[in-house]
View 1 (cartoon, rainbow, N blue to C red):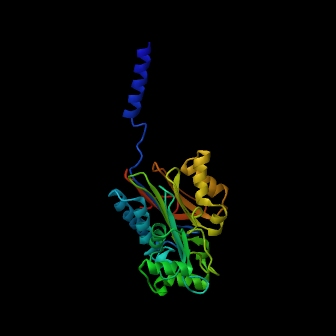
View 2: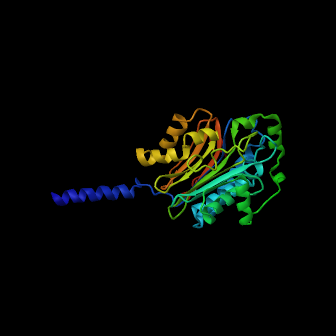
Length: 323
């Protein structure tokens, strides 16, 4: 009788494993966003393919690093630097104009292995703020440098600098002059990654809000609001109304729901985005240490994409996968 029960248990276990009912987690995974908001299909008709290509190019940058065994931090930094260099997105080269017709850029990065993090706010001559944010994390004992202090730190780090006019683009200038649809779009860029060592990382970069005044800083450089990473739960990057993401601690709240309430990535993200934030506030990308991903938003669209070692590769703007 005892042997019979043992044999039955063994047979069931064998069948479960052989039938693939316990799927393997991907060795690495990557999720990105390029902003959420009122994204009109009509207004995007001519540039839709450019956005799709831009997202695919950013994903390819991260794929190369992660597939070669690179770290999640390297992937996040490189992906976001590539998106900062693309004038389509409100970060780096494509940063929006502030009230005075200038550009103030913010970024942050976080390591899920040890909670190390770095951020900069209000930089005006740094070509790639995400790279400076990582240097704050690795080359200083601080977390956040702002404005003149961040610029001085960039001097000390011999960062790649540009004249502030580098960030000028005609499309952003028209939006600034007319204060039209960009006030309803949240064009921040973000990335979350899982590497082959099981470490998570997250990063976010932005040009902020069109017409922003008085040195306004949103959620992108605020750890716990727009960016969070913890190997025990998840990595998060947000895009939306920065003030609301700060008020509700959106990124860390998602992780807390996973840690203390036992929710999965999608359930936790939906509870915050649809249950705490208001409609139109924005969205998040979330990735856990098993490669489970969520891309949740309460606007009518969000530029986003994901890739993983098991062959998944997709780019989306609205509900359907882009070809």
